[in-house]
Length: 122
Image (tube, rainbow, N blue to C red; front, side, top):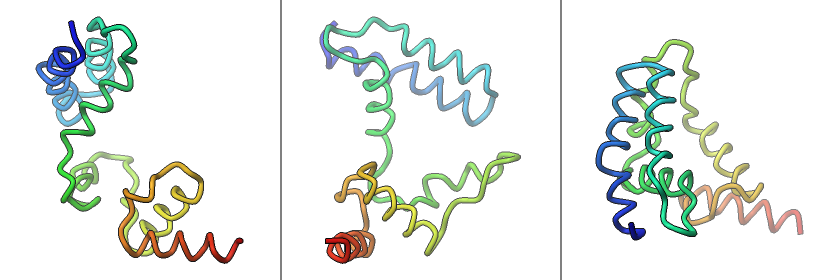
């Protein structure tokens, strides 16, 4: 199986199975869905965990806000509230300054804050 066929195999049943398990079932089903995806033999040089995460991330529309993407999780008992406004901005800035979030993933305001904080620290 080549890398393109592998990606296709991950997007077919495994990704959809994981989505159903997360939204409608429970932790045991989530674990089983991830295990099934990672059990698909990967081509040489391909890390199955990175490949599956990449396939899932690629399916996320880039034009959606955090609230649009994660708002459905607010109905899950025990799920923390989503950071909004200043808290979300600060979280993104902190992640970028720690090297855990690339600058291209930030909003213009977040990038400006990161650049100002780097300049102040220099």
